Length: 363
Picture 1 (cartoon, helix red, strand yellow):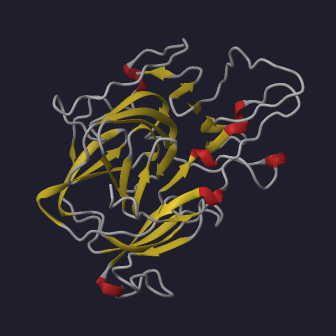
Picture 2 (cartoon, rainbow, N blue to C red; picture 1 turned 90 degrees about the vertical axis):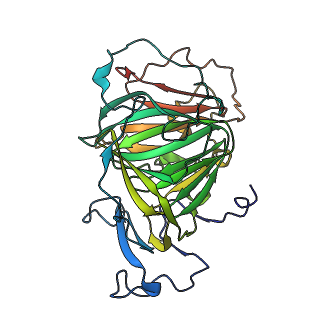
Picture 3 (cartoon, helix red, strand yellow; picture 1 turned 30 degrees about the vertical axis):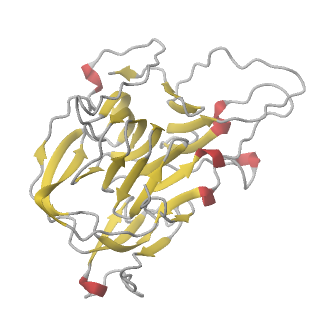
């Protein structure tokens, strides 16, 4: 764990960042994104998280400068995916209220399971092919991904570790994510997960949109999740050949495919842009709560939202109920039951994670 204790980050949500590995000073081109010859003879690639013509305020893209192009791999082949699905017609709709016990983590002596093989789809709605909707997964793993990485062509992953630490290596750098923190790996970003024993957590996947900070309205300029508390990795690369082959796993239209190459994909020496992975410590959430009387709606505890095309309605909200003072003039009782026609993801005290929805199909 010594090598991850020294990880550094840059702060800010959706900011324009730039970073280069200190082992290669001057790796970022000056004054030009794609010069004829990049410093150190690196290859320039752009990863776009939005349409080219999106308004500047919503345009997301980053330029990556890597040792070898990301397309240096053999053709992708279909993979077995017994627990990962996007076909909600595999089960009948279930209108009853649902919750589940924690998934058991296999013992290493019985079966080695990494982040990919330990992904289980619990429920979802919409369709990855039409770029609208979401899926909810649980992951259990007891071993690190070795000479393999994963990237999602369908949408963004919001990862919530419940037990154990995750050392997530991305093309942009490395993130150490612990319980009470969340991490977002956006569409198309390659990453690998290293664990340090039995590990379990949750994944909220959204199709066709990205997570945003919710509007604050009458709260004002400050409160809830502040942009400065979101952390982005600094550039880190490995120039490593893999004789036995490196596996690239791609999730595309709900199905898994695997391709082989002979080098590590984490060979980005420098990058700049505003389309990045990031993490957030939930203890930094600035709670707003009732100080007069009655119970506020849970939307006041929204950390991140994935907006839909309908104003005021989200595809999914990530909401927390953290420890807080609940001071009121008169006592009140929170509603015994709250029926909603939206999909709400919540984390309670870092121990319980549940999703409530009407018309949600359960796998």
